[in-house]
Image 1 (cartoon, helix red, strand yellow):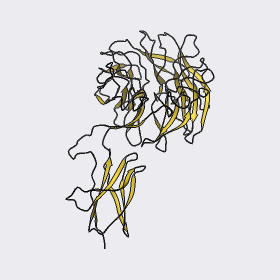
Image 2 (cartoon, helix red, strand yellow):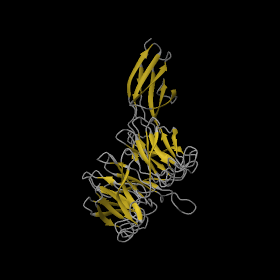
Image 3 (tube, helix red, strand yellow):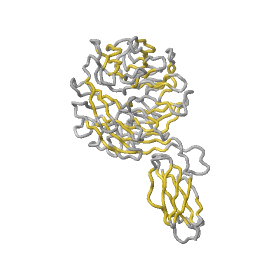
Image 4 (cartoon, one colour):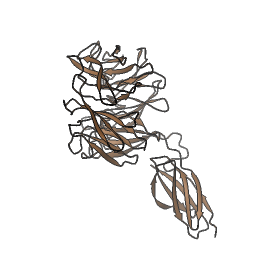
Length: 459
């Protein structure tokens, strides 16, 4: 007997009248100590779809870890730092032209001033160099690929100056470190580099200093790769902001965008814009309930807006009235939207830069919070994923094979029913975590005259 099959496709959690879905926050993992603790950097995604990052503490030696996490939340630790090869990594990983990841550890190494390392996705770890103070010490920010094939970065202190106030450094893929510019403590051109540099199309490197400048509240600068330094702006410590911790990002409009940790009209930090010719504009001042003290660099989204985090502030607070941090969105015409207030159970104190995954979702980390208060990895879905659509249904003997469209990293369930006038939907097999653009499931059919199927996208 031929079995007619009709399909009904529904999307879990969306009403037909919904115009714009609220962001959906998902905690992928909570760190537990032995597998890492207190991630203070963002993530990088490899070609296989997995995410890689570092934790400042945890692991077998409590000197930090390098970890890998799948989009579904499966965690592995390819590297445990042991002080000799580095300790306390605070910076994230950067993908090189060779497909390997390059990074820094804040301390450890031969001089206990930090290290530079390389890691391949097949698990090979190599320590490339130890900082020696004269070429920089205690790197906090990510390395960035340069147009010349080298990497560029910053160190919080060290450099060639006697009153070492940090340095912009060049790092060859082999690990050779060369100071590009060395800053002096208390200098009017800035000191203490905590954020990354970025390279613009003209080849110049742009960055921030946390202290120094004309008023002592930090600076914005640019330098050529051969060390010709220009100070672009000195923060005044009031409405224009104070103490930029994070580096800059270039928006789709060509402007550079960044944040200050302090200052602004409410004293909780600011968001600003900088033209490459040095024209500065304050765009937003944080008010605490919508966030406070941004520490991570912004990321430019596919919609042209900027996304970021604050380490404190928000709607949920601890016993001392301190907020757990937020995720926010800022359009280039200064429209600000608070997307998430952390509540500690789902994370607290994000310090790493967000990233957009290949699935269009935002991914990030928090330094604290989660089920063990040791930090989390999370996903934020900004819009509802595309509803699943059946692509084909074929029948062989008593077996039906169904194929439907999916988004990698999303979870789906197929259900069947023989009568649409009832709500007796039955699960077909187990839930399926999609890894490609389609998924397949088979079902053994009985003697019913008809059977209906629906594909559910699970939250």
